[in-house]
Image (cartoon, each protein chain N blue to C red):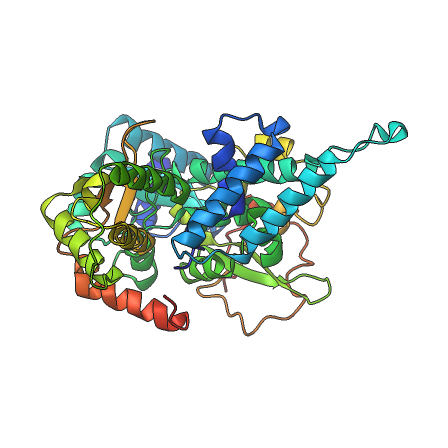
Length: 263
Length: 222
């Protein structure tokens, strides 16, 4: 699955810094390298296509780590902190993320305020095709979802999932199941999506189905408050064609073809 | 012209236009009335709408004045006009913010800030006409440069680019070595509907003399 729609390596780093409550100006590079690699492994294990940028960043981090390990020659005590450049990139990126939040918290045409001329091509497009949802802190990102999923798997394994031989479970089937559930209830707990899953594989497939639905903007993952459980919410009306499993599957199919069909 | 009369005309113009009308444009239409007086009268009218809790407001948007519905009525209007929301994703929105604050900017520069490839997101933003191709940058490879559109201003109800939230602090913080080439106000909104990307003269727009964003929305009128 393509990750572009989700986040990149800088997002992952910012996420790790926030999660571990680290000082961005004094990043413990060992810890970050270790955790960063763990996420890359997890993403690979989930069969998520890890973009080349993630690997480039991994190399950058390793490089910084090795430079920090080198003893500093006395006379070069003034040498620049090898982390400096990365920190500046992170800060700059962070600032743009904040700017995006500030932008989206403004009133929007077609949402808070409306203007005349809805029948005219241009304005119609403006109003009806794009609607920028408030990006709230509560919106849950990819890395947090991966965390939640990891915990879920851990818990489930404690409860001994039966190692039944499962027939091939397909992401598309899980997509239909999730949509079916969301038809009855607008909001579901993250865990509820996995109730029916009986094996590790099935759990993973369900998770991928969820990511696919988020990517296609049929559902949203959010957190009502900090530390609250992640919830999954319908992002479109039940009547909307986007909510029809067949339509969603056709989108998935189309993207697959576009990507040369990976799985 | 008597002031009440002028106010009445202005109200009608805004109502019918739908789109933001610049002072210049209004002055051309009304003829023989100073822009200053037009501006004053529009402000009075705006004030009146506010004070009387009317269902309309006059907003300063994209270098002009536009009639919009009162915010508190949004729910009802949404019922009248059934819209299907298609959300901009976080990456799209962040990319849009980067382009808005740093324009004119190349895709490579956006990629550099975001740390990921932005071609897909940029394509989406072009489709929504939130951004447009402004020309090419005069560096090897002559990459395309992007900037925001008038539609962007209209959508986010911005008067001009200098109205972007937190712009000043933003620039105070970003100590950029390439400050000149990121000259935010060097970009002008001379967009007509649909930018013809095929038909760009390589160095047409880069060399534009900086234009104050307030005057940015005037249309080449005949």
